Structure formats: C-alpha cells, structure tokens
Length: 68
Image (cartoon, rainbow, N blue to C red; front, side):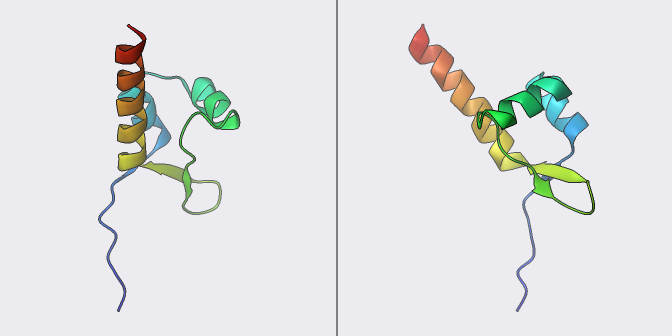
C-alpha cells in the first residue's frame, strides 16, 4: 500500500516570503548547514517541506528569546 504524502511543499519564492530571506541568503545558509535542505522534485526543481521551514523559524525565535 502506498502512503499518501500530506506534507505541504514550499517553492523558493514561498520560502523567501515566509522567512524574509533572499535567494542568495537561503543558499548561503544551506552551504553552512544552517538552513533546511530542499527536497528534489524533478530535474533542477526543488521545494522545502513546510514543517522544516516552520521548525527553522521557531528555532530562530527561541534563540532570539534566550539571547535577550
């Protein structure tokens, strides 16, 4: 039996809008292993899971509160 995927996928522009980061910043952070890796879709097309982006945002919020 094949399990249906229920995880929402976000394309780069959606990730940019959700995080407030630019394309170059996203890829620079990924190169430093400080941002979630995308899921390959087809060819050079990638997307990020909504849960990984939400988790990354929550971690940034928590870090800012602990630093204050």
